[in-house]
Amino acid sequence: MKNLGILLSGRGSNFEAIAKHVGAGTIPNARLAVVISNQPDAGGLEIAKRLGLDALVISSKGKQREQHDREVVAALQQREVDLVCLAGYLRLLSPWFVQQFPRRILNIHPSLLPAFPGLEAQEQAFAYGVKVTGCTVHFVDEELDHGAIIVQKMVRVLDTDDEHTLAARILEQEHIAYSEAIGIVLADGYEIVGRRLVTKITAG
Amino acid sequence: MKNLGILLSGRGSNFEAIAKHVGAGTIPNARLAVVISNQPDAGGLEIAKRLGLDALVISSKGKQREQHDREVVAALQQREVDLVCLAGYLRLLSPWFVQQFPRRILNIHPSLLPAFPGLEAQEQAFAYGVKVTGCTVHFVDEELDHGAIIVQKMVRVLDTDDEHTLAARILEQEHIAYSEAIGIVLADGYEIVGRRLVTKITAG
Image (cartoon, rainbow over all chains, first blue to last red; front, side, top):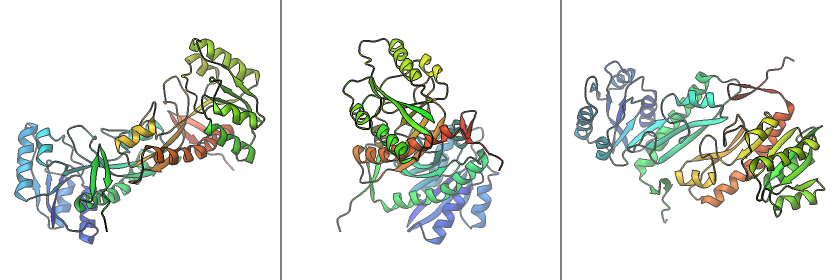
């Protein structure tokens, strides 16, 4: 059994989708060990409690990044977390944090990276006038929205879209993509070549 | 009937695909008025001649950009070209050229712009490790690979791909995308909102 640790700051809709997939057994051998929010009022905490999960507030307010990161890492290590999943966690991780979980931190981003990194990616893509966008699950490294890509899902932009309808369809794909990516990482059947993640060919 | 002018520098596989679509009547009301190469030995010229088209070499060798552009624009205007299609034309157009055909110059690029602009986009995307890439047909403006997007087609990157197999599958989509974009532009049923191309809603 592998322990997932979720970090969030808001409503946690990606966390909720992961919890459903874990519950339905579609991410094999995974359990949700802990949900940590840096915001005391994050909606995701309520969902975690309703699901009977270990839900923790480690407030970032007034703390230096590294001090806060040390508290979060301690909580994750105490629960023997194997894989950290950022799910709307509105904090940059310090390089030190990243080094504690090498290739064991995932993030999801609502665009086809490397296009539209940073905040409000859906709005950026809509305003740019792309016809195809989507979402990306990637390993977290020390650069923003940069690590090796595990899964990308495509979403067409429709003539009838506005920023909100587009973001809603991207979110549907996020909910599928994140669990798929967790499954790939936990199954450990991949290797990283350069910065490409490729499935290992296993001899039958 | 609308007159298309093709500019190319190489084998002209996108030009050949456009010619097939024009021949098959899938781009209505279009005819190929002229094919111009800046390279005397471009393979695309042979295809143009085989198809009985007006095929022209306007060599760029040893010429200033604007001087060469003036010769090309004169040839296009003489043939009353309505829409200029760059099909592997390895020259940057001068701002003056672009201004002679406002929103009447198209280009195709082998990535989902704004990701991977510039040369060897397929190789860039492969090395970055994206799982989804594709091609983009866009209006040419005064910045490289930048104008409003008309059509994008998606191509999945497979574990079994190398740069060449990926580029080949992108090229298949280019051959579909370019004619689709020409059809949209010639039908004149769109408007540009900000930099988004959207289909006009026409009252029945």
